Image (cartoon, rainbow, N blue to C red; front, top):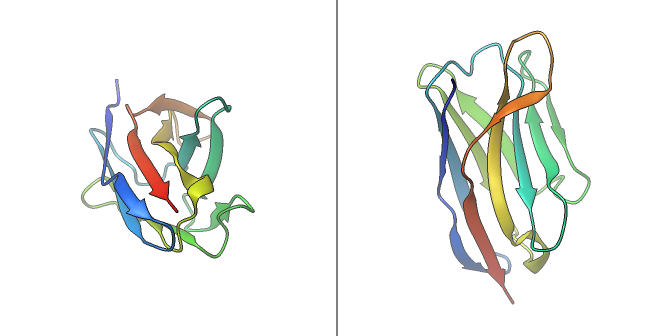
Length: 118
């Protein structure tokens, strides 16, 4: 069982920045790692993916503002969030697949709350 623990959330004014961290009990190296978020009353959505080859994907809503990265030596995943908007308010989760073969998230952390005020 892989455990993921997010941290770094908080309250910030619009235009501000936050850096989320995700500590994994297992390896992050060679895995497709993702960040999701879920706003009140909305479905969970993927916002960023870091593929095992180093390539990235971002949702259109965060492209150019969020950056996903990792420190595989420490089994850490990061999400740098700049120019935050009220619409970014949500619980943010990191996720990892069961295997390195597929990019389908199986393990999720408990989430960290991000609140952006105007």
